[in-house]
Image (cartoon, rainbow, N blue to C red):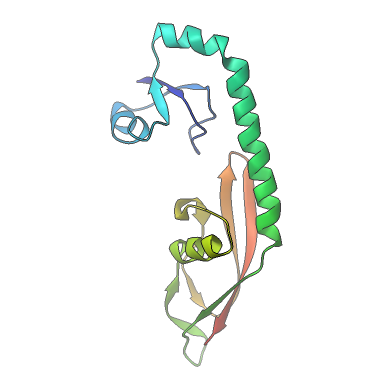
Length: 146
């Protein structure tokens, strides 16, 4: 199915792009979230007329992602967790936990954008956050034992 992206979709493209996706993906995920609309000949012609506005919107998303990257990379994240004598955590720290910590610091970051393996030991770890196509922030996380 050919669709027109109404918003930037990570892994798929930028606003205004025309992409071919599987029907199931479009009907069950992209269309209900209003990220795309079905591409028809009339809509494609309309898209060509408003292409400059959509490219401006994509540029604005990119600039916001770059400024957010700079702010996030200045943050130092400390997490206190229960750990054993050898430094192994009772449980693990996940991207969901980090998403909640970022929300407390004023950053609304979806847990799906945080690229991190589960942290299971005390120490310093690095997490990557995919903010936009080509914009990835790297954050240092310090895990401390309680």
